[in-house]
Length: 215
Image 1 (cartoon, one colour):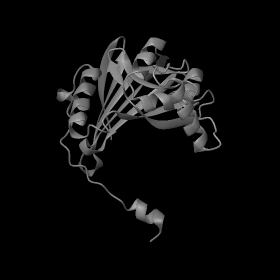
Image 2 (cartoon, rainbow, N blue to C red):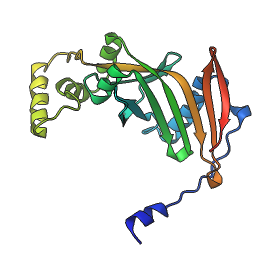
Image 3 (cartoon, rainbow, N blue to C red):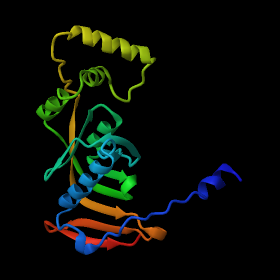
């Protein structure tokens, strides 16, 4: 059997309880909060991991895993280097989608919307909440740019650490946060025989409309 055939033969059965319209919260943020709390209880190390999908001005997509650091009625926030590929994409095309996948719960959530850059003060506050090693790494790296060798990065970290040995490391102006303002949610619950439950929230005249989707 070829490797391709072996992959195509892989199967996973979904056994979770169903998702019913009557159980869905009217506000998708409240529904997300319920699912996030379940994910934190089940797998706290991975619960906030999310795929961030962006596209450049020509429509070429790119996706990567980032960590959710805050969410509330304003939106869903993460932090990064503004010069990174995702930062460049968002400067050209400030729209994105987030995907949470909680394998143990057999659940996915997709959240789509426009993205805004957070004020510098927000990034600075979170920057100084991070471990010193993470601050150093963020401060010396021009994320996604080519580098000749890892040792170059390590030397930069050592130099900056020595420079600010007894001081607070300044937050670079090129580092900070983004906030996705949701316009579309989809909640997916895996079900037996691939007859999955899917519910979509869409804003219509300022109100959230809920629709069941075919699997």
